[in-house]
Length: 52
Image (cartoon, rainbow, N blue to C red):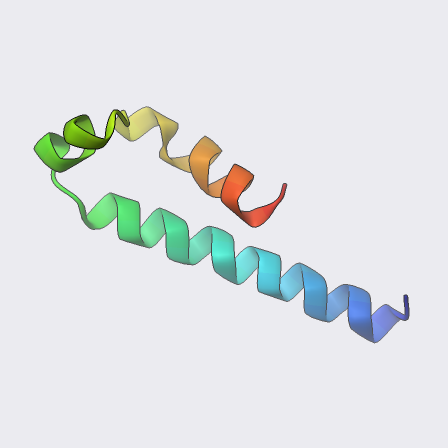
């Protein structure tokens, strides 16, 4: 992989992480509970989604 490809891949992963965090943070505690997610788990779930 080239440096440009690595940068682009890192940026895409970061964007996916941020989008996931933002979307989950917008949910109410009740909606998160219905999904079986605690607010404290959001960053870990976002990291897994982004492939970290």
